[in-house]
Structures are given as structure tokens and as C-alpha cells.
Image (cartoon, rainbow, N blue to C red):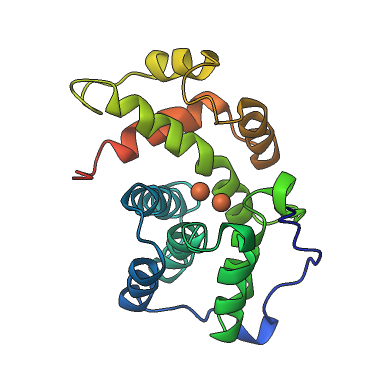
Length: 201
Ligand SMILES: [Fe+2]
Ligand SMILES: [Fe+2]
């Protein structure tokens, strides 16, 4: 099974700036994704994308939502149509005339799987956050106090333990950091802090 997208252009430049409303994006998420763990993952990545756009990129609210939306919907088709990941969500967003940058970010969130290189900072940060967010959350679940008192050294230790969250590809994460031009440790710190801010229920 190949998830290669076999193209590098997504959406149309005339749709730049077009987004789904917050309600419509969440409706799509809830319609398409029945797996609560996956839904949580997408909300966590969305929260990281929004926080990064606001605090590190200094973007305005409209742009923060574009980043958030890319995070929120990046795995939308993974639950019901894993063989079509991420073709199906790309086609849906193209049919809805959504901003091509958002679609490109989704298309490039796994360059080794989809064959689409991350280009913009939005692309690169989505790739950088994706797997590390999940690893950090897995770590919180094995701590009695969850995110409370979580420290960078703890997450660094788990990262080095190959048996922990074994499906998370460490080389891919390092590759993502290199592409984004960010230090692994600083992203870990950011994720610990931002994911720890929210009560994920
Ligand atoms: Fe994915
Ligand atoms: Fe993901």
C-alpha cells in the first residue's frame, strides 16, 4: 500500500486565505473521526500549531486559525480511510476551496510517506509537532500526575528509550527538527508546556 500523493500542487492560489469556520472544522472532525484518541491527538497538534503561530511567529488571529486548522484536520481521514490518508481530506478541502497553504501543510506532514516535502514554516512545524506531541502525551498517561510537574529531562529520557512509544520514529522526528531549523529540546519544552495547559479530559 502506497500513500504517495504523486503531486506537489494542492488547491488553488485564488483560494488563499479561505478557511472553514471553527464550527465547520470541528463538525468535519467529529463526523469523520470516531476514534477518541485520534481526535485528541488532532486537537493537541492544533493547539500546538496555534500557540506556535501566535507566540513564535507573531501571526495575527486569522493566520493563527490557519495554522490551527491544519493541525486539527491533518489526520481527519486516518480513522475511516487509512488507505487514503491523506488524499481524502486533501480532496475534501480542495472541493471546499480552502487556502492552498493549509492543504499543502496537511499533504506534507509525513514526507517519507506521502512524498511531499514541507516547504513553508507551517508545513515544517506541523511535521515537527505531529509525532512528538503523541510521544509526550503517552508519557503523561504513564505519570500519576499527568502533565503536572513534567520536566524536559523526563521526556528526553523517554525519547531515548526505544521501547517507549516504539511506533514513534525518532529519526523522523530529528529530521523534522532539522528541516524546521529548531532544536529538539526547545520543541520538547514547548510541547510539555502547551499540552500541559489544557485539561484534555
Ligand atoms: Fe498522519
Ligand atoms: Fe498526526
